[in-house]
Every structure is written in structure tokens, then in C-alpha cells.
Image (tube, rainbow, N blue to C red; front, side, top):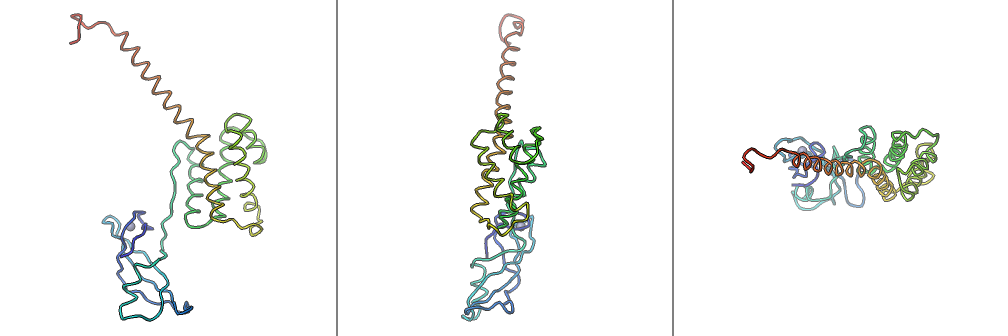
Length: 230
Ligand SMILES: [Zn+2]
């Protein structure tokens, strides 16, 4: 048994090997080689097949590969892609932000950062900011009181790192997974500040207003017939 997030259903499940592993040709190095096998997802509603592969040392006792293989560090196809749900964010922006996280979850740092940059631009547009250029857009968001000075600084950071990617300078400065993770954290903070937090606070305000309205309506009710509660 091997445990992983199933690339089909997304559940954390046990994967049962259903075909014995076989060794890939021409992948031998330093007494190790790459083995591949088919596994079935344990989820009753899924039961789809995934391919797992990993490196094992050559040789060993008979049956060694079959036993050792499922417990080693395996790579999977299809891979599980982690998305993220952005409540209260306009759907097209939420989808781009979700894709940025999906890129990051499969190690596509450059794709993640380029999409984060697109999220910043689209956020400004949705807020009615139509000035040219992303720098001016971020500054206008700050000047309009939509984001704080601190968030504006962070947004400029996203822009600088995402810019080279969007304009073909790939390779000048490699983006590490750590950098991309930090930039996506900024992106999440921006979406929270612009869309999610105001929406949450407005819901709280509305609930308070509804309750007040309810109390008022209750106070204005005529006394029950007979002068007391039924
Ligand atoms: Zn599954």
C-alpha cells in the first residue's frame, strides 16, 4: 500500500498495487534504477488507476522490489493538483488565483508568479481603475484607500518578480518555489483585503441591521389580546 492524494478524486487514500512493478530501461545509475507500477485508488466512489514510479536499488531478495516499492517515495501520474477557493472574489479573478496555486502545487513557480501578476492587474480593473500600467494601478488602489500602503508595497514586489516572466526575460533570475510561495501569499492577502474582508464585514453589519430591525418590529407589535402572552 502507498498513501497519496489521488490525482483523480483528490482524497488522501491508500493506493493498492495491481500490476507488479517493472524496471524502466536506460534509467540505471549508481546501482539504482527506476521502477513503475499501476495502483488503484481505495476510495469506493473512485477506484481509478494511477501510475506510481520511484527509484530503488538493484538486486536484493526475490520479491524485494514488490515489497519495497509501494513504501518508497513515489511520483504519481496523474498528480494531485491543489487549488484554493476564493469566496467573495469575482469568479474570473478567483479562477486565475486558483490556477496560480495549482501551478505552485506542481512546482511550476514561473507560471504561478505570472498568474499572480495577472490577478493584481485584474483586481485593479474590477475596482474601476483604468490607468495604464500596473505600477499606476497599484498606486491608485492605495490612493483610493482600497489597499493599505503595506499591501501596495507587497503588490509592487509581485509585479517586479512577475514582470520578467510576462515579458520574456525567463532565465535571467530563476524563481524559486520559496519566492513563488511568498508571492502567492501576498496575492492571497491582497484578495482578502480588497474583496473577502469587506464582504465579511458587510455581512456582519447586515446581520446587526437585521437584528435591530427585528427588535424594532417586535417592540411595535400591538399587545396580545387578553393583555398577556398566549
Ligand atoms: Zn481516487
